[in-house]
Each structure stands twice: as structure tokens, then as C-alpha cells.
Length: 191
Image (cartoon, rainbow, N blue to C red; front, side, top):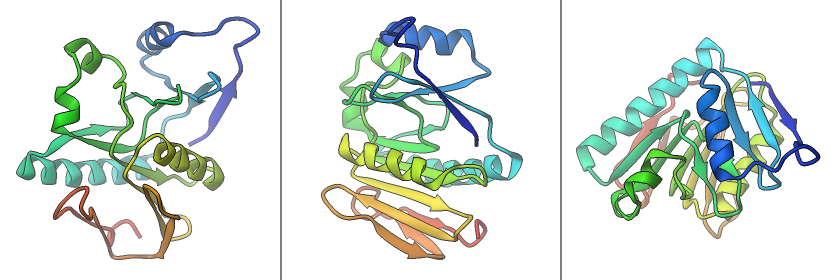
């Protein structure tokens, strides 16, 4: 997925509501915003990446429907991170308790939380360093467990709170550990 970063500071500093309105007025464009307030415009994913994203979200959501422990979000969901960035991971999950603490207004807009769990799936055009920086940003803002699935190099980078990242070469599955109890993501079809 190609992305372009635009610094609007010399023209306007978008506040939270203005950024939300910009996104709502342009539903065919995927925006993110980094901690410096720069606007990131991302192109849509290709068919293969979209299929894998859909498969991953389906598996996560089926697990969550059985366990009823939290809320699953797809790549269209915006999260307002504590550092001021607005991000949209390919898949995300937060526990029910955290979700239920939000007002209806907060639930309707970009979620003002950093997800406890995130997945980023590298497409063929994604720069690995950009995704690694994003995963570190999630972890630094409170994500407990994150998976960067790198199909190109057949690797998974696992990001855990307070730990160095772990790199696995072509694993057949991933475990949700104690964050997502009993969740196992089969990766056989992704490689």
C-alpha cells in the first residue's frame, strides 16, 4: 500500500474534530495522522492483501464471538492514540471493560484508546521500516501484543509490552498468549 505524508502546518492545524470531519467527508480515502499532526494518505490494498486481511479479521472475530471478551475492529477503524496520532491497524482488539468505559459519542468517533492487540499485514508495496515504526508506536502507546505479518519475507515480528520484538521465520500459527486466551491464528494459507 503506497502512502503519502503531507504537512499541513503552514496552512492549518487540524484538531481532532476537523480531522474526523475530513475523514467523514472523504470516505473513499484512507487517512491516518502521525503524532506530529502530518496527514498520511494511503492507497487501497490490492486484492490478495485484502483477502488475507479479511481472513485474519474473520478468525479474530470468530474467536471473540465465542469468548465474548472484547471488541474486534477492522482496518477502517480509527484509533486516537495517547501521543496524538490517529492510526488504523489492519485488525485490532480491546477488552470489553475498556470499551464499556467509553461514552456513546466516543464509541461513534475515532476510538480514543490504543488497542490492546493489533495486527499489521505487510502488502507488497509497504515499506517494512514504516510498519515497524508503526508497531513500535502502538507498543509505546499501550498495545500489549502486536503482530507484524510480513508475507514478503515470510516472517512475523511480535511486539510485546516491555520486551524486545521477537522475529519468527515462517511460523505455522501464532498464539494470542494471555492477551487473547486460546486464540490461535493459522498462518499456513498466508505463506
